Image (spheres, rainbow, N blue to C red):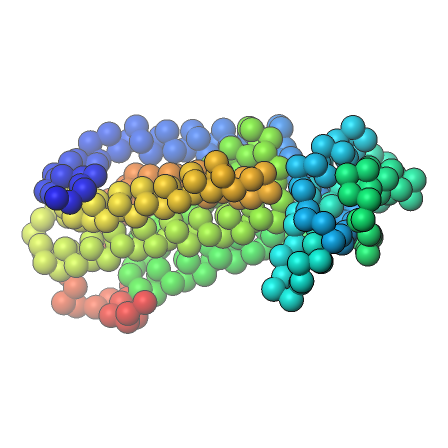
Length: 322
C-alpha cells in the first residue's frame, strides 16, 4: 500500500480561472510592495548595526536563562546564539550575545555593556567575556546593498539559464515567478514585522533555487510534450504537463514542509524566522510554478515547429543536461 497525495491520473484544468489566479498574484505583489514602503521591514542587528559580546564558560550555555536575565534591561532586539565547534572541549562553552544599536548611538555604551555582563554573571558566575565588537550603520548599509545585489544576481542568472536552455518565453515566465515569490516573502515579513536579518537573505536565495527547480521540472515536461503532441493547442499541452508532474510537485512540497514545520516548532527562536521564510517560500513557490510561470507562458505562446531551430530562440543549449 502506497501513500498517494494525488490521484494516479489527473486531468485538471489549471487555466480555467487563469485571469483570477494571476490577478490575485498581481494584487498580492502590489500589496506586498505597499507594505514594504508603508510599514518597512523589521531589520535585525545585521542591518541596523549593534554590538556583539562573546562569552566563554565552563558551564553549559543556557540561552533561555541568558535572555531572561538581559530582558529587563530593555535593549530591544537581542540575539543569543550558542557557538558549536568540534575543537571545543566540555569545559569550553561559547555563546554570542548580539544587541541592536541603541537610539542615537552607533554602538551600546560601556555602561550598558557592564550591565549586560553583570546580568549574565548573575546566571553564571563562571562566565567570561572574551570579545566585544560593534557594527556601525555604514557597515549595515553595505550589507543591505550586498543582500539586494545577491538576490538580483541570482534572478539574473536564472533569466540567462532558462533562456539558453529553453526559449525566451519560458525565461520570462520563470523569472516572473521568482520575482513573485521574493516579493510576497518580503511582503509577509513587512506585514508581520518578523525580524529580517542575513539568515532571511539566505532563505530568499534558497527560495529562488527551490522555485526554479519546480518550474524547470514543469517546463521540461512542457518541452517534451510540445515535441510529442505537435497538433495540440498550447493550453492542452500545458495542462497535460502540469498534471503529469503534479504528483512529484506535491510530494516534494509536502515532504519539505514536514521537515520545515518540525524545525519551526522545535528549532528554537534563533532559526524561526529563517524557517518561516522557507515554509512561506515553498508554498508560494509551488503556487507560482503553476499559476504564474505557466500562465505567462500560455499568454506569450511558444514556437511549435521544433524541426526548424530558430537562431534567435536561445535554445542552442536545450539538449544539455543540467
